[in-house]
Image 1 (cartoon, rainbow over the protein chains, first blue to last red):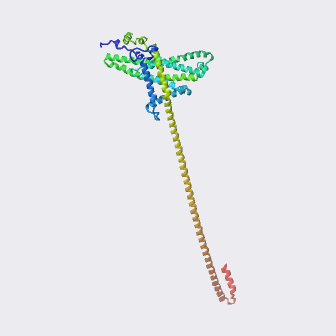
Image 2: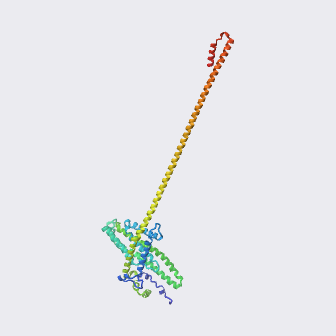
Image 3: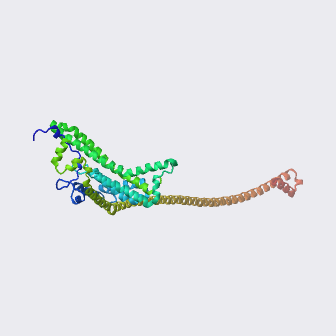
Length: 259
Length: 182
């Protein structure tokens, strides 16, 4: 290979990693006809499901009084989310605990599995986080109307505010209510996407600098990648936690619309 | 941007993604993504709600029960130990009281025996004393009688020697008796 130009050395494509592609060659699924295509996203969805099954189904198989390590990790997560639902959304929200647990485990495992190099980041896709947020939004809204009927609208009517301000506040509350799924989904997707893109950029620098300096120049970006990786681990867990706790907050609004 | 297009051309089929810049916005992949996402979510939901969560919940509950059972059992044992200790204390106090009672009784018995012995001894002593006194009295009477007879004889001899005409034995005896008995 001829000496590469700087332009070729640093031809970093941080967004390529997010492309949804067929595993059996190039090209992504197109429209409804693409559903049958086996994509990298499907592979990592399957791995996510299997990892969750391994932790929660296989791990709890022993039902041991003194839990094994895997069993105790599963029980810790169970207890953590159970307590979160109970504390944030109230005791009567416990019946939605399996739904919340599904959301939390899916996001957490997808986030963490995405940190395996060359894997695919499911939760960096707005299509995925958008569906998750819309499921929460629609579920909570429908539930609110079913449980409370028209009283659910009191959520937007601040009784304690001065009468003249109440219509204004109602408009603001209404807007903020409909912005919820947008912020809910973009917070998660953008965090994941940005983190992975930055990692990829640093990795590109590492490769380019290694060629330019015959090795040692790559040290700085590699240190930066290590630091970013630590941060991304934190982000992966924190974003799963934030998504879940916000879901609990929204659920509380549906169950108890009064302020 | 120049590098982007060369790379994009090299990848060929990725041109559509490259053109938008963000694969996240490639709308044509959404049906596949959303469909399989929902399949995965339903799978996770059933795995968790049907199998894993009830099992984990039951395990945790069993453990809580076992722990509270153990604590209760420990409290039971503690109560039993306390009862046993109380019984032991009671038995000890009873034994002490019994021992005290026996000691008192024995002491009283011994005292009674001592008293009886003392009484008997006193009786003997007083009997002996009484006997001695009678004997002393008898000896004194004999002595008195002897003294009187000696005194009478002496007085009669003295009177007969000094004044033979006035000798009156009866009067002398009465006078001696009156003096010696005084």
